[in-house]
Length: 351
Image (tube, rainbow, N blue to C red; front, side):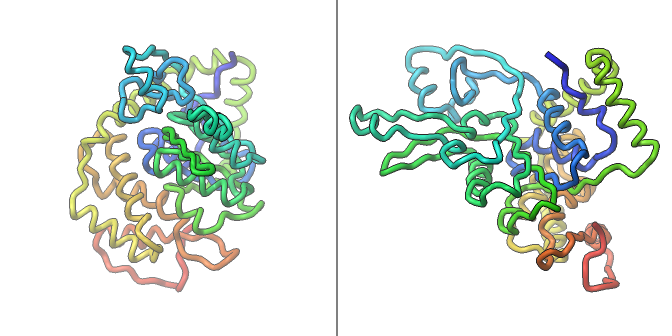
């Protein structure tokens, strides 16, 4: 099998890579939306992330890939099987589950066999994409072209970690925790603001304009195509370093503390930027904790807040229809440092 292009070999696009890594450490952030033109390594980065993550333990033959060590998150079948003894275990590399652009609701959530339920009194469930995506990476390319209702379902499952299907008074639930990655080209249409806000993080990427970096892109991709194994060997140590940092951050994350002073800074930033609701505050807090874990710290710092603020706020800035998204990071920095900030114009300043 051909080796995936190494994550650490991707030239530039640091914000995109950080958004993916933070969600790999903490899927409860709520996913990442990558906005940008074609040919900017979006798909390459998603597949490279999956190859970077450690193998996962799973219950053998479970359609939901349940974790044998997390009984509280088992599906109904695993709970029933466990009554007869220890569950059989297997290992597998994390996968990228892609959602087809023309997917119907039944294809996404799965289907219930109502006739079987009425005749036999038993629930028979045909798993959908959300079942396949449990504990995996769910990749939705051109998410802005999906039906709004389908996007709603995806975001609900990402937030709740559970998929529930109800038909004619019969319901079935199964675990659906996944790393949600959506990509879109804004030129092909926007997501509704209500849906945009529900993505935890958002990154805007463009083609690289540095001549030297563009040359690096061509050289690295040519070397990879000519000899995937040899090219991967050159980046093996960097890949292992990042993989180890992600594993260590996952273990450290539950112990990260956020002080009241940091929470106050987060709230002040949200107020000054003028975002709607409280989701921005929650996401900044989660992202800051995750950033701290990634950096090996036991408490979130101002640096962690600053590093995650742009990812959490970019898509939540108020704007008029068809207006370009602009985020004033000078204002964010001023709030973090407790300095007064003089607005030079009515709009936000930074893309």
